[in-house]
Length: 158
Image (cartoon, rainbow, N blue to C red; front, top):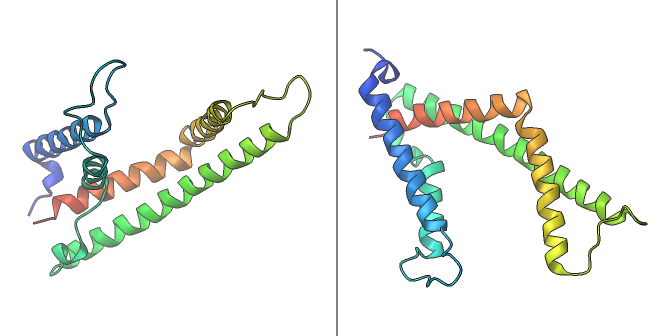
């Protein structure tokens, strides 16, 4: 039996499914333009559901019965754990950067006189930590493995 990853139609359908899910996710998180009503906007629960469908695999019970399905599930678990661990390191790095920025004094210290400025500094620290990690080979490998494992898992889903 040939792999579904060799089938261009399978690959196209898989990509189309991801595009549809990303579109739903983007719609769910859409913020209305200033001065426009939020009517028609998806509820926060819909945003969560779209995110969950996009990134969460089917429950393990859906894959019961074959060794290949079990192997795909375990591969995804290992990949998700690795990516989660690296993401945790990013959060830790962002926190350290924020702590260092807040510890500064003198003219080079970031001016924090409001919650908005504190939030902006936190976002800046988080973006810097993520940018540094995301450009690293380890993070790219972990993300690629997680995505490949997810595709393999979904390919075997009923």
